[in-house]
Length: 305
Image (tube, rainbow, N blue to C red; front, top):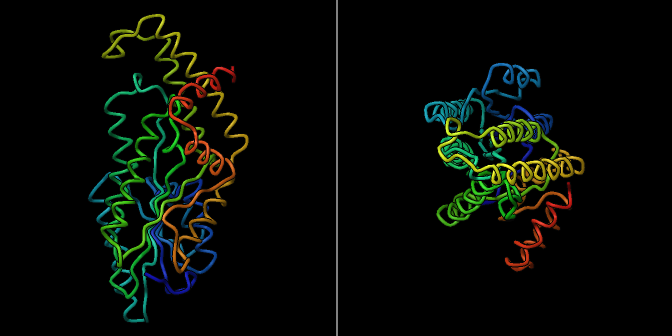
């Protein structure tokens, strides 16, 4: 479906995960361009920060894993569109699913409950939010902010990468199911300078402590000393890779540029890459045989320590 000018003041966009990083930058960008932005956050402090951006930003307290909160967010958007019928046409022209949580660490050290929490936020939450529809004349664009990590078999990133891979396939199926009604695009950033790195570091520190002091009381599967030593080294390697990636990361505005392009293009692409590293790693992942990739990656990890 084609869209009118994205920056028409009668248009609105719904963005999840707007407390910081990509979501906050995109919210600021669209509001400055005159759109109404419904931006979801999970606490009052972040909501007040969004409120300070001006009347064009409507902060919504919403945990995307909570069905009732998501339903309330959708109702607020629908009420805004319906109210526009009195003053002129209003449209929800885009839904940007950006909310996500990281989960670095070897799969053997990650509990099943943590895995479920990651998939509930990164996948199920997107499904719930993507059901937002406008009662106006314009069908909203769906934009899923994924990650190039979904295409890279890298030690210590199994849970997060798997959730983003599931999100990519979800987008592909939605694209088929909603063809002719709603366009669906996936944005695949490389390394982006956002607070997710600090969250990853905190989580890695916790896992490192767990690996070093593993016992039958802290895990359902106690690890042998040699296994603990192996995972300790792997976690340190992963942390080093993270520091290198963070030092060369693109700013959140790079992702905002691409999301705006996906929202405003007459014929949006199914898939957008963000950052030189994303283009390079995407190419390498496509042309490198699995057996070679599986051999090279551990060598690269070993070289960073």
